[in-house]
Length: 75
Image 1: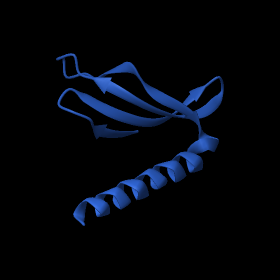
Image 2 (image 1 turned 90 degrees about the horizontal axis):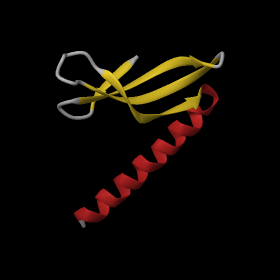
Image 3 (image 1 turned 90 degrees about the vertical axis):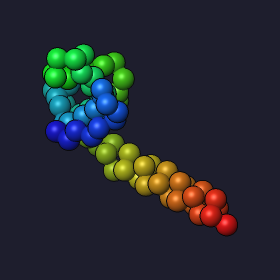
Image 4 (image 1 turned 120 degrees about the vertical axis):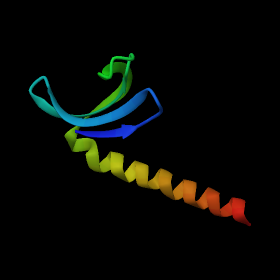
């Protein structure tokens, strides 16, 4: 599992889980209700492992768009 900070009360957890006997990639927001123990929210995404390459490609395209837009701001 990988945990990324989202803000002071929430984190994003990325994990490989089983659902209906199949591996899925689960990307979910967790929150701390003040107990120090994170709980899942309904915010998230579950995708089939077979879609991982497509998701990475899509994220890389978004990164390229951001870099292009950032370069336009500097001119």
